[in-house]
Length: 98
Image (tube, rainbow, N blue to C red; front, side, top):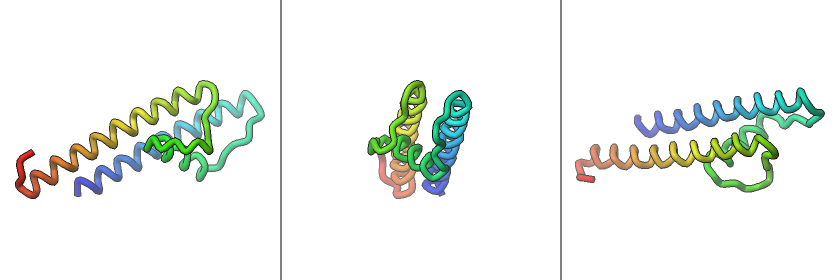
């Protein structure tokens, strides 16, 4: 149950970052004529950035790089926390000391 909750929490974080990107892109397109990526592209960018894969096929420019950096830091910290939590729960469930 804990693993399912952790995965759900990661999906919620990815959804929140997607909303952040949509907001940033909306504000940016209001000031310039910039083509808007679709929701699939934004979600792909968020997942690649959140997991710190960084394929490089979609690259943020300007001030949006700061948001991407914050996203990577959050993703790495939350992923490490999830791995640590899962390990502790597995040891507790299996009765082995950490």
